[in-house]
Image 1: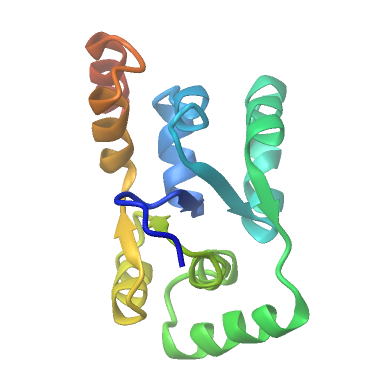
Image 2: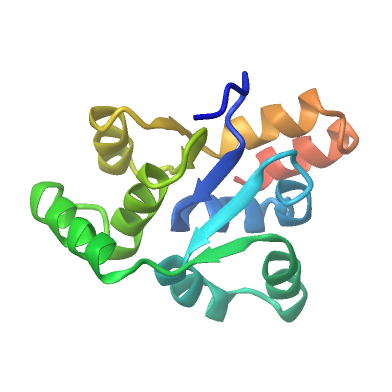
Length: 150
């Protein structure tokens, strides 16, 4: 177990990737001092909607996590408990539970509740804005435009 003050891994669900894409912040997400992880189910579901440039940014900077059979069983176990999140979203929580020092990024209320029930640190896209601002990765005008687009 590492002793970092801040989590070192961010696992992204569909809703946060879509929000960050809409706000034109994907390039800043991958510049945060965290390992960005996208479960393969989310990657396959979302990437058809992303531009070639957006896909290249994530493909070159993010870790795509393919869940092994045992973890997929955990996904379906979660899905039987929490009905509303998609299988892809449930794969995010399972992925997060298999990393140390992790934050699950989601805008899905039921997935947030499941994450909290599991003891997983959970935030939304606004947390990314806060981190980008805290680390001064861009001008505030860019963040304001992202917020206005949401």
